[in-house]
Length: 393
Image (cartoon, rainbow, N blue to C red; front, top):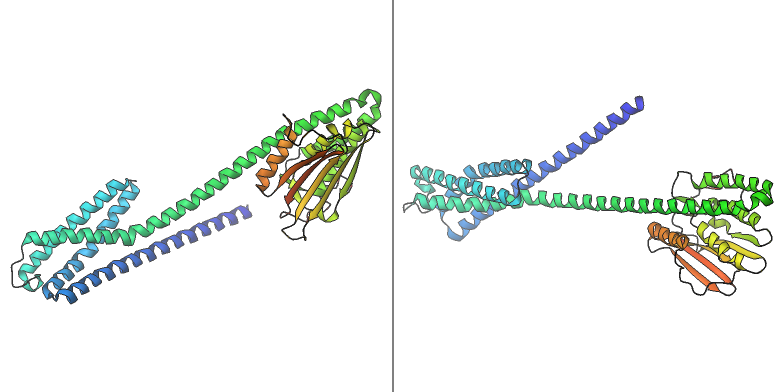
């Protein structure tokens, strides 16, 4: 109960801190927008003064800015917030802003004209009459210009930030979707592969039931151990050491099923044992080497399983696994129709390592080699105690 309360309190603190940071960022953006608009307005007034030297025009502009700019900016901000809450489209929001800016600008121009009737010095040209139509026209144009400034100072930064956040969220969703698709396909491959292995192994044991019941019972115990480890719910990856131990038990079943016709040899480099690779990755290759290679040889068939690290032991090193048999070979290295095992190995390598891993076949009349090469960037020192129920090879 205490831990739940602590976790809840921590989440509340994190949310409060995030909201405070967002409020601070909004305040800074508003201050920056106000400073930007004030600077542009002052530069405009200074330009009019130094170019035209028209004191009345400059004073009327200053009065207009002092009276109208805060009102216009505040009204536009309220209107934009309303449009955002109501989720209005871009066109209605834009037209509403133009109407607000133009209307308020024209109204403020009329107010400045009215004030100038009592204070002639505020007229653009004190010696000549100032018509209300010209004042309203000036206010309307100035309102639209200030609307553009307001949009540039306030809306544009928020739009850029919103676009950046949406882009990051889209990238995140795309990565999550790709991970889900990858996980689903890996699960499908394993779901297909594990019954495939089980049926083949049961067929191998079936021949011993009548010939050697005791050996069949022993192998069924081995099969139970294999299934317990193969069907265990855990990470998709496992160390090479774990996978080789599992293959050793699988090889025991096959050697017992074909005494005198099949023998396995193991050449596993010590430094390669902790490298991570997908679970059951090598089992289809071993099965192919037995079924389509070693058992088709006249005399004793042999399967050699080799693994070594190629490189200097850094992250650039690669794990190379070779499954070799002394069978008659195959006519060419093209994958035969319906060879699910080879397809599963290739596809799992693509899903896990994209283009950084490969499977290739080399065949001749003296045998066939299946060569898997993959990066060992995921080399984790899980050690040899990860599967204590199996003896070390």
